[in-house]
Length: 311
Image 1 (cartoon, one colour):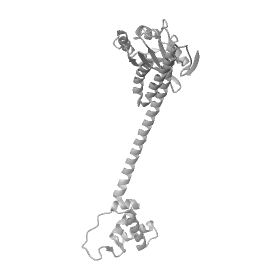
Image 2 (cartoon, helix red, strand yellow):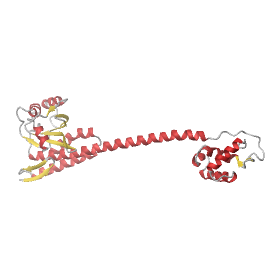
Image 3 (cartoon, one colour):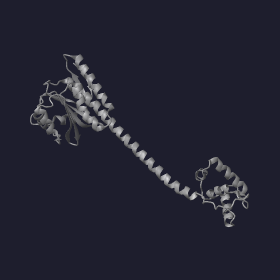
Image 4 (cartoon, rainbow, N blue to C red):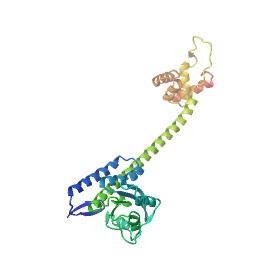
């Protein structure tokens, strides 16, 4: 006999009549379990898993359950053979809304405690496990594997071959343990993907809100910075100049915006000019007033306004 470490603990392989066949089944189970990496949602993953283990492991029925506190609840059932069998019909109907306390006599309680996959050759008498997998499912032998997520048992995977009548053995136990282990990893992957997706959406929403806030803050400033429409006067050779201050009408417009605290970029946007043109106007304004900087230019502009020379 040989020993191999698998998910759920150390298990012993019996002397098999067909080792090559068992190896092929294990390869099929690993391949099917790995295919769950393409599943994008937790709900789809839970619904799909029982069908995959039936297909890959040559099983007739599989059931995935959740463990919450001291209760386990059947969640997803796959029946690949004998779907119209009255036994399977009753089983499917009976599992709906069923919650089973994890008492000390249950096989599942032992699986939870030991974190090991167990092969049940015959249902235990006077146990809730017997009533579910024995009386309802009429299963003579089945396998129960723990689903470990985030280092705790979060569910169970049951499987049997009721319709074909094939007794389950150690090979089936190893196959289910392997599949359940990979399923747990895939479930954690989906949880991480969901969290990342939620964080990305929250970040995008925060950026959008910040951008909206920025726009609502900048627009009033630009509206305040817009120059008043100039009073139209009869054209004269001197109409392009404000002779008293020496500034052109365009330079006066730029100076008015400077006085509101507008930046060169904002002035360029308000007057539909390039930023380099605005910089050139600012340079000429400082030279003509004269002023050492923008603040002094604003001060001189206020003086011109008081004197009525900045119209």
